[in-house]
Length: 117
Image 1 (spheres, rainbow, N blue to C red):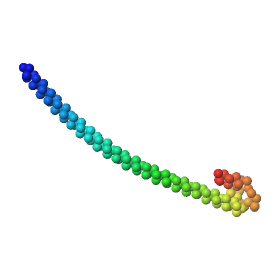
Image 2 (cartoon, rainbow, N blue to C red):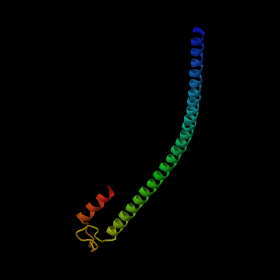
Image 3 (spheres, rainbow, N blue to C red):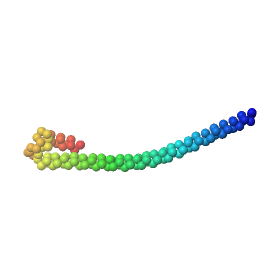
Image 4 (cartoon, rainbow, N blue to C red):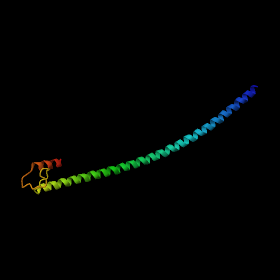
């Protein structure tokens, strides 16, 4: 009887080993799939980061261009007002557009100094 019990134990152990081997094979497949997905995600992440850096550079260049254009526009407006003042016209809000008659206007000078700063 001991032999039968011993054989039963060995057969049971063999079944357990087969079950563990199947589980181990399934686990290996899961790990392989996970590693493939991880690699694919790393590549995608790398490409997205590169594209984001390109996009940021484009946005910064566009922002600089707008700022430069705005500065040019402001400079041109100031230059026009200064030219009008030197031609003898008021540029202040009090007497805008009227002739200065050769005298300096403190309002105009104050306004031009604010624009210059």
